[in-house]
Image 1 (cartoon, one colour):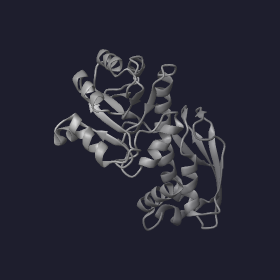
Image 2 (image 1 turned 90 degrees about the vertical axis):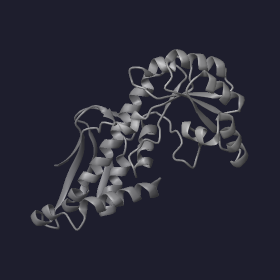
Image 3 (image 1 turned 120 degrees about the vertical axis):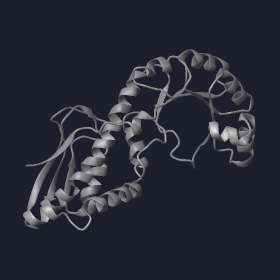
Image 4 (image 1 turned 180 degrees about the horizontal axis):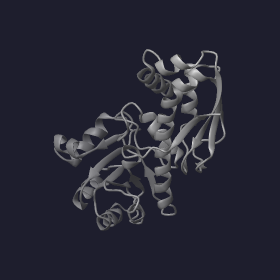
Length: 275
């Protein structure tokens, strides 16, 4: 994870700083030292403080960064999340990148926490999807965990998910599962996307480990859970909103995947202020 954080931060700093921060270099003497605070301007679940620290440390190892909260904690408007001290030039060069990443991650964690709270006590758990910002998947998925959710597969390499187009290309659900079983290690679970009860039955007969119930009504999902009867895990997917997620969980599904956790996130409001 640390190597991935450094890769992302270096890329973001290069994009933002380019040949240099012309404003700060023209105004501020090189030996100016400042103290700054990262301040919450709303209530949210914080995530990404270590990532923010990495931004400043990559610019200047002498910057001091002290966390007051830790990832996963709820903060309130006006709370100081962390304070830092160092070269004013370095702090200003890192400010936007640090805030961009911290605000996005905190937004993801906060939305995830709302979904997790909404299904509390049902036995269902909330997971993310691959609908992440390009290049930021490791941070997006970390933020989901900080908010109390779980990760679905990280990419195409760590889990089998047979979707509608795979089924069409393979000639059917049974054919797709058979091919996967015969060509892949036994350590990889096989998940299949289904659209109706007939496809759920086909997935069961072919030995799927996880059956995705895609864009089904609550009634259809409840019937599918009864049909599956514990022989596979049942995952609800598609059209999952905060208003509907409790009803979905009460159908008895094991997993609820929510693309909105990462693809429609609203960034938390955070400022860096010199003191």
